[in-house]
Length: 501
Image (cartoon, rainbow, N blue to C red; front, top):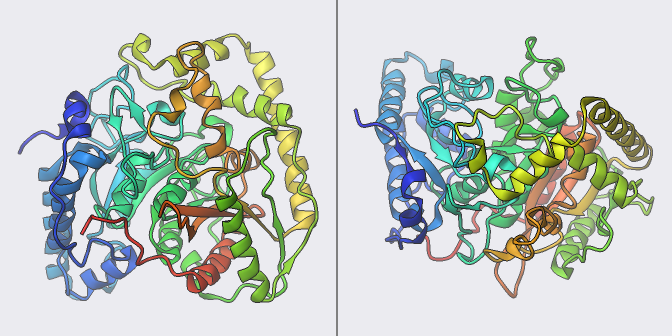
């Protein structure tokens, strides 16, 4: 068996090479994961066929798009073959796991046994992980075939992947623009038909931002709903997926949102599955609020992003819901930035590094800022963030059932746009990213569930434009129901980036 291919050593060649695009995409390329799993159980398609289609798409498209940073095709084929054998041996396929034989890549921030985890960093230890993290094991228990690892910004700290270690990950809708991030490769893999869905992580918008940039569905669950080995950045971070359909998102949430008695906190499993809840009609007369003024003052919102929100509001009003003009309880800009960044500074703490001095300048600056705060002051900052969060959520519950915002304040930026001013101040990379994350990161602080839906396309550029729906904590069921309403009103599953077959 050949060793896995770690593309970090040859990233320049992979980032600049031009691919040979398949003339016609196979039937599995843009299919729903739920429907693909059902076809496997009906023995209409073999997991081996599905995996071979995915690997062929990766071979053809990824040299240009750069979604995958690690491939282990021998292991992938072996897992697919084992899944196919299990289908043949099963007296009834009803007992197979829900996603048996469906391929899914893992973002390169989580450990998978036998594969290295780079965290997108040249300073990371390249040794293979000894065991898979709990979230990865949950995917395996559900029957997924792990397809490889996808690109991320270093430590997931920026909403794009453009670095020396993993190279530039490009948007399949426009190769000169970012696909968002930090789950950059995840969004590209699904949008380009290289995988039916992909694991993603969200600490400030890293599920929702790439979903918006690449025309996908991206749900950030409620804080604590999906657990892993540790709580990420005081609960800002959480795992999930990017998908093409609301049904896929709901079904995967059922897999991931299991009660975890070993976690620091984990709610009981819901009484009804999210997949079942999605098909129910949402309650009538919901109070729908809108927020199009950015939570951070001084950031301009692209009119196209505002127009996308207006489209959603018209649709929901026509469906019988009430558009309310209750002001959203935004904190002052300085308070929000201060409390968020105090926690964000320590996001890479504990990452195993072979050479800490090889991390990127903005992350060195974050580390230095974190070292400048003692543990007493840090804990005081966490308390302030929790009090701020409580004020926001109390105001939300009093005034709204759902909130509609742009997912981003801008269209996907051009490659390299983030670099302005970084030679003088490395932290300019984060400030330059504010328009991408200004509407998403607030709800990492509050822990509320939020989903980006690809309801709109910009006529001038052809780029997808996401709209974010936010609900009260633990109301993913309501988010999914209303998301389904919008999916029916504005179908998006058949939209595909141009020129990919």
